[in-house]
Image 1 (cartoon, rainbow, N blue to C red):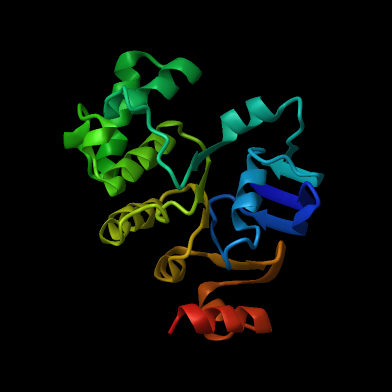
Image 2: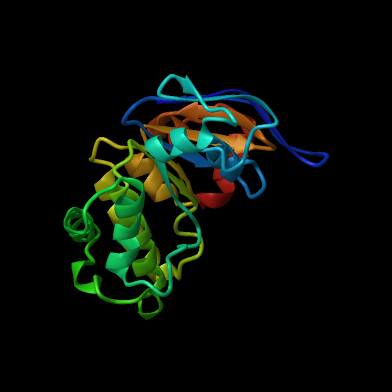
Length: 240
């Protein structure tokens, strides 16, 4: 479903991604972990050309993303959940969820609202449909953002540290929603520091450092028997 081939990314002279090669199968749940500045978020942002690789290729469902087709391909294939919620403050929750399907997918208002309520039920926020984002907690806003991504009905959802901006008390409510999504036939790539989530949900865990993928494996290998010394060092510090 997703393929990164020899992807390099520079920001000025800073070499952020170094020959990253990665394939994600349809329906697979992949969690990317690693220290700050390791290239995790940039890797995910290259998957939908929010960051365009300096060199290398990105393929979605077998088709290469290019400068010419990137808007159409990304719009048709993937949605993204960011650290910040990026909700329209002047719109209700329902308005935030229906604007995309109406404007981009040509759904009727009735169809878009039915879709929105369906996904609000999944994230547990139907009763907040007429509320404005400013009246919601951070966890609730992120759950609305997840519902919005689901309303796009894309095959791929990318998550860029979706709990990092949240109060510790609200992190679990967002993770619970993401755990629920993991049972659906959605391809998920998640950048996170939440190791418990990675253990519970991931088909594969990827460890990155200094712009490179150093280790890939299922959670049971990754957390119980990592092979790379840098992985062992990282896990020893965060799993105390």
